[in-house]
Amino acid sequence: MVPDGGSGTGDRAGTGGETADEGAALLDDLHAAIGRYVVLPSGEALTAVTLWVAASHIQPALQHAPRLTVVGPTKGCGKSRVLDVLHETVSRPMMTVNTSPAVVFRIIGEDPPTLLVDEADTIFGPKAGDKEDLRGLLNAGHQRNRPAWRISGPEHKPTAFPTFAMAALAGIGDLPDTIMDRAVVLRMQKRKPGEKVAPFRSRHSVPELNALRDRLAAWLTPLRGTAHRLVPPMPVEDRAADTWEPLVIVADLAGGHWPVQARAACLAMTRNEVVHDEQTTLKTRLLRDIRRVFEHQGDTEALRSHDLLAALVQDAEAPWGEYGTKGLNAYHLANLLRDFGISPANHRFENGRQAKAYARNQFLDAWARYCPDPAQPAPAANEATLARRAQGKPPAPPSGTLPIGPPGGPAGPRSTR
Image (cartoon, rainbow, N blue to C red; front, side):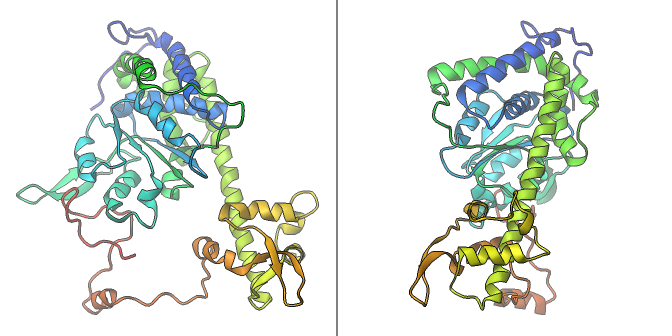
């Protein structure tokens, strides 16, 4: 249920709290505080984090609970520090690194916590194991009225557990599309020499950030009714609009420069993700084309960099002849393959000569992950699967579903791995 709040920008937000007219100054203070402790990828990213934190204080008024994904290519990019700052500023923070899914299910309600998930890559990776319930909750909880049904209590009654809650997820590498498509994405990098941040010390940092959190609550909690009624004009459409609308609502409540700044950040960051997706698609195309070159060469052990480039550029149906200004070159090729852990090395060929080359076995893992060969036969079904088919039983649910069962307890058949 959404509490009523002030309907005008000049209404007092609570005893000793901010007026709505003072919201812009409060967001400025939060923006400055976050920027002291973390180096974010861009000014737009800092704007987005500021608004995301503020939006957590009006969650009961929202239709969508945007995710904030904090991803980086390696350790040491500042992902955990972002979560430290969020923990002291968002509404009702709940860290879920080692939290039981049963606890999370029971805590989420009409006024949900803000979930903060570190090492999120382990939840969605191949070693997720018993974290399937939490993975399913994170997938479902972006939109209101998507409960998880469980058999619960001594009478074994079907019970609907709410899943709706804002969540920040930090991890190495991209998370699944089901999360990234519903998220404000922060692509963190290691700090460059000269980029300084204030040390995060509990005795100094926590009181400062908690004071900002309390000011946000005093300003925004009484305005939840107003926020619920707002339908702000958005610069994007569809799912991107669903994700960014709560942030724009906060900016419009604050006024000042924030409405324009929020929409500019929305456009810049969504466009950046479109470009990133296009690059990812291009890299997958490159992997497929390289596999084809190796096949045409009889799956030789290695190919000279020069010969591989020549074969790629000569393919009239591929984009490599027009890549860059003069076509794909050795630098481009190495740069595109770097994220897959593939690089050229000296290789001695049968004629005794050495040359820079790409070994075929370097590509095997990337081919299997990103562009599996459809011509390869499917793995044979195990005995349990064959038995289910013979008895007419349905297959096990895919990973990431919300199986029926008591939270944290037995949850029906698990997906085979």
